[in-house]
Image (cartoon, rainbow, N blue to C red; front, side):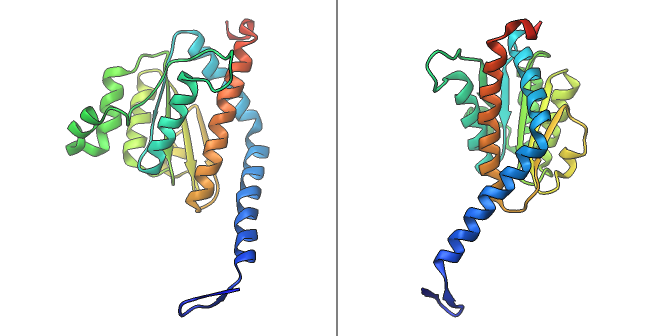
Length: 204
């Protein structure tokens, strides 16, 4: 038992148990509810890759690292024998990104307007679904014919209500649990995309 200054005793074991419970139950609920949509998203992504498309991922702050993480997963598979698939994080080009800083709400949309092709996949990360620049980027992607995916938290916000191809909302306000669930989700997306590539007749 320890004491936190001015807050009385803190039971670290109970705090740890509560944290582990939240980290387990929220993802369990999410994946039970979203299993069918996840499978459909994987099939749609695999078809885009099969057609020569690329994954273009983007997010803000800590979620920028998830955009980088998921792009690395596809480009550099960690499992021997899995094919590399084209992907990039729009947050990686610091020169371009900083050059667009005066129009921060348009930064990702501006990149997509130049880089994106209709067969590509746009994956936007937002902690609460209300990130204006993520919303505008997904709008741009939809207008250009890309497959659009939102990985969101909270209640999904404006992005969750916008009717993109796939929006996966982790219904909690805890940013750590949201990000943990997103990380598991895009690992599942990566794995199942490769399952479809093992049965390429399904991708025609």
